[in-house]
Every structure is written in C-alpha cells, then in structure tokens.
Amino acid sequence: MVLIFMQCKEDEANTFRAYAEGKFTYTDGKFLQDPIHLISNKKIIAESYPKESGTFVLAGPYEKGTYKLQLKKFKIKSFSTETVGCKISADSLSIEIPDGVTYIIFNDITLK
Image (tube, rainbow, N blue to C red):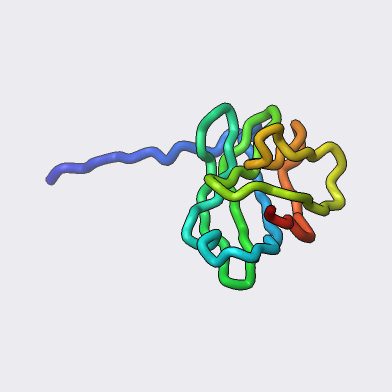
C-alpha cells in the first residue's frame, strides 16, 4: 500500500479578487466576438465575452496597484460608475481602475 499525502496551499490573507461588472452600449455586433480583459501588471487576470445585452462580469486575482478593463479593438467613448478615480486610457481601449478598488460596477460603457 502506498500513501500519498497532498497539501493544499492556503490562500494568503493579502490576496484579493478584482471584480468588475457592468454593461456596454455598442452599435457594432462584431464587438461581441472579442474578449474583454482585466489587466494587472501587463498580465491578463480575467477574460470574458460580453453577453448580447452588453452585460459582463470579470473576476481575477488582485494584489495591489492600478489595473484596467481592456478591450481589443473597440474604443471607449464614455463610462459611468460610482467609483472615483477611474479614467479612460490615452488610446481609449481601456478604463484604468485605481489602486485599492477590488469591486467596481460600470453603469454604462459607451463605445465609439
């Protein structure tokens, strides 16, 4: 008889989840074919596709620092959220989310 012992790694108290949800307003149905991402430290921490209604939910590991909700091709015209400090990036392909925000709801993200 052989016994194998496995140990589960406990989650560290410093590890959080970044959670973003919301709704896109779009006119081009091709938008639904591209994934949306949460990016932290130049790494994808979450990926999803918006539903036909434009709604989405993303969640991934978050340690610290700013992160962003990023699109591949479609540019962001405007957005609304209760969270202070978010801004559209210079290339209009992402929304930058400030350090320390682990839960955010976008009431609407309008695409160009």
